[in-house]
Length: 394
Image (cartoon, rainbow, N blue to C red; front, top):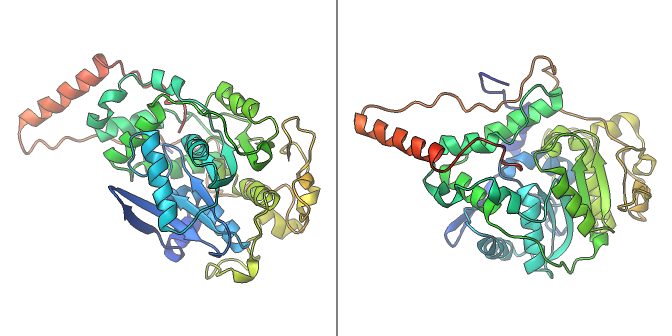
């Protein structure tokens, strides 16, 4: 929404009150993460994009942990190149005494998951890639001012990142997801923002992966997405044997706007790659519903995964396989879920929140500081050709 701050979703407030946010320092980096679910289960680690934080996956943590899966959602640490990312993430896993992982990455998070799988192939057992890409050349070309990103004011970085989100009216669920992510971007520091943009602009491409295509699921949205379709098609071409989960709608943040569908496909993926849930060891989120983590659709209909209809099908790259081909142990949960989310807005009343508010300059120290700020802005705009084009992925 424009001109104000969107109210925080009630389920998120409750989640924050029940699930602790962990912080650990590893070397020069601080990791912020949520870790919930039975510790004996191999974890699904969620890696966000440029505009995301560990909090954006709170709906996945709530749902999957109640079904007996362990979910870890991380913030991207302040690393400045892909080599540093691999080493920092590996040390993070070592600190948690985790060796084998299943990675779910969205946008930049999907690319970083691929980078880690390429350099540490023995540790990555499977991948779920959502609106991901294989190379960063286009993003580097769209950001010629990346060498001075460290000195760019925070409000400019936020505006540049949020310019990648489609403007205009959205359906309510997608508008709510945009508002939530905009609120998360506001919590990020300048170093957080600049390090993410550096990771996105550093020229790199994914080489050969030892991981079999059968252990990869590609989950993309079929409507507008900030990642160009050409880059998403490259992922499908690289993994022709991967399973496909196509969401008809969902925008850039389907994990927030279409949580039931995303959670369903994540559960199907984990079953397919052999992760056994342990619902008998579920702690449970006190005060949560009594459906043992079932989606809204499952609770109402009582249907099963095996009955999942199209068009949001999941199967091989040729689209011939249906969801029930994913594994032998299916049939205990829900069918094609309906979208869930806040319903207090209409598409005609809501616009995506992309404005950062008015920037105020404290003139108390001296007028010299004001002139320095405007000189910096003029340099960034004129010399570095900042045109506020979309960052292409968020």
